[in-house]
Amino acid sequence: MASRKPAKDQPGSFNWTTENQTWCDSQIKKYPQGRENSCVIPFLWRGQKQEGWISIAMMEAIARQLDMPYIRVYEVASFYTMFNLAPVGAFYVQLCGTTPCMLRGAHDLREVAKKVIGPENQVSDDGKLSWLEVECLGACCNAPMVQISTNDSDHYYEDLTPEKFEDLLGKLRRGEEVKPGTQNAQRHTSDPEGDNTTLTDTSLYDGSRAQPLKEIPNAAPLAPAE
Ligand code: FES
Picture (cartoon, rainbow, N blue to C red):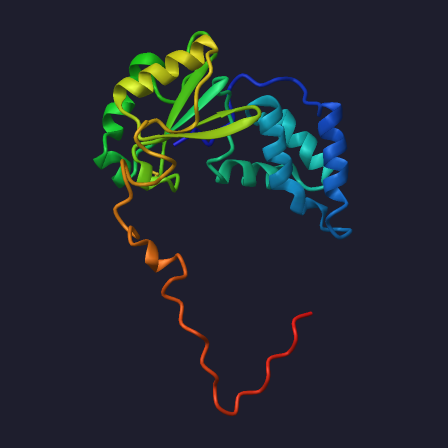
C-alpha cells in the first residue's frame, strides 16, 4: 500500500497552473453556497495530476480555497489510496496482486518490477518509474495486468508476461511508444483468444428467429411514440 504519511521532503509552496485555477473556479460553481468543500476530491485529484503527488502545501492551499480546516483535507487525502502523499515516478505502475492476477503470474511481474525499477514505493534513480502493488483493478479477465499513470493518462496493460512487462518498462523508460490494453496479439480487448467460443450461432441474433408479435386480448392500445 502507498504510504499514507506525507513525504519527509516537502515543497515550500503550491500554486495552480492558470489552466487549473480556471478549472477550479468553474468547478466550485457547481456546488451550492456553503457546500463548496464537496470539491475536495476533484481538487486533490487535479492537484495530483498537476504535480504527480499531493504535498502538504497543496493540501493547505486547497483547504484555504474551500474554506475548510487543513485536517479535513488531510483526512481525505490520507484515506484514499489513489492519492499519493509522496512523489512517484513519471510512469507510476500499479501492479494488481489480487487472486486472479496472482494465479496468472502477478508474482513474476512483481519480480520484474523489483529488478527493473527497484523496491516498491521508491522512485527509480532516473525519476522515470515507481511501482506499487494494489488490489483488483477490475480487469481480471485480462489478468495479469498493471495500470500505468502519468500526469495526463491512466492506462491498463493487460495479459502480461514477465518478458512483455520488462519490455514495456524498457520502452517507457526510453520514451518509445507503447500500446495500452491487451498485450496478447491473439486477443481483441477482452474477447476470447482466437475465435469466439460462445454465441457462434448467428441465428441467435440475426433476426431470423424473430416471431411476429402476438396480439394481447383486451390490451390497451399503445400510445403513439412522441
Ligand atoms: S484481480 Fe487483477 S484486475 Fe482483478
